Length: 383
Length: 123
Image (cartoon, rainbow over all chains, first blue to last red; front, side, top):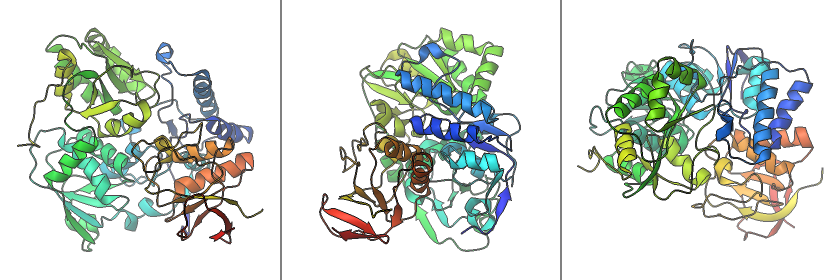
């Protein structure tokens, strides 16, 4: 029930990912009608690694479709960013800025961590908003729609354990669904930790905004987050909920490691640097090791000499797409578990690629890639 | 437009069209889903709710384009992703797939039904 439209300052398009001829036909229709985006518009990942075409092993119609979508979106005036982490690009959205973003992890990050305002746009509606420069003034674009209604109280959790974040995120998606939640009791979190949490939440439920008490911009206090109302519901999240999340994402997979895929959503420069530091401290990976990142970040890695470090350590850098999107990149025939730091990758890879996932910290991923068997460090969830 | 008719298919658990439905065959491909293997083509498809990616719009529109989609969608709760997919298929290809919110009668799957004035009726 929107009564008005509002102006948006930018858009991020998810519909540039090829699912079939329909995506090409719609973009073609807009081009034929003389369509052009009216606000700065970035592109989400596509089906192809456009910078490394030799790595694409997909069928012809997929490759042609991916290239055609790239051409059409260029004609529509979109920037060829090809990343699911547009908030890492220079000049990210600011607090209170009205935007129209597609891609679930980008939506939840923009809303929750940056305090920008976007509803859940997606295939077709994102491009329509970009061409109009407007969106319906409803939901998460409004003060009322952004207020928390659910308070999620976390159990005592250790500081400095990175897997806290994907697991809390995955559990949050199941508990909150589309209800705006405020988390209380979250350990110290970097922005990368919060995006891991948000990506996990958006893969297990339609989460588009969460607040973290005392951490995120619209939740300095409880009164801030809940707009002076009482929570409609209070849920105590338990360690059992986190164990259930871990089980849903592959459990404690022992034995052989088939490979590693990190960078879902696209790795930040800080995450890449941490990976390089871990890799520099030992021998190269013995199993396939993929790092997905944006082409901007990949260029920065090359400029700093880190791309060479990664290459020497056996890491394949994937840009413009995600390893879970199509069996074009990952060697899915290998026996064993595919390790990842990402709840989102672990949630989608089984259906998309037919592989068995396992969630592990970045250090565990590196150690396991060297030994070829699962090396587990932290046992905080079982202690 | 004639009232859509077809065999009733009741989906037992929320499903993500992206990743859960094959855009080439129009079958349910999510292995752990209770309706794994179900063919959506030609059905009056009843969904308890959708979940997951907004790319579900594309998958629904794509299976409608190739004639592997349902005749109508009967949803238990509003879902913008599927409604947009159906709208795009009509706009681009002239394929009609009405999306309604309605009660689902307690009939076995496969029962021929008709969608009349937004409600499911036995044929």
